[in-house]
Image 1 (spheres, rainbow, N blue to C red):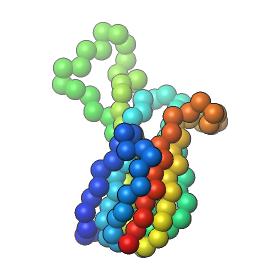
Image 2 (image 1 turned 180 degrees about the vertical axis):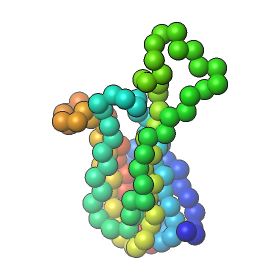
Image 3 (image 1 turned 90 degrees about the vertical axis):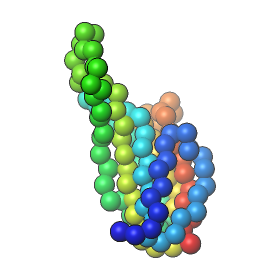
Length: 115
């Protein structure tokens, strides 16, 4: 895989970015592993192709679990895309329960133009 890797997070929601074929894109969003809420990321258009998506949980060395189990420690959910063709894609992520109630859900929106 060649090209530039771009790293975006929740603060990048609403942006429009331009990438080139061969670049990669990581979108990392906050989550709480173990809860029934999850990020879904529908993408319309062409250009980026999903390589993988997974929860990333980092437990600090000085973690104090006196308030309960580390099961509900904060984490991140990362979507990794590889740009395989030119075109425009619209990402419309939603953080929701297994049955999405999108009216009150957190969102992540991004437009990607590939040249």
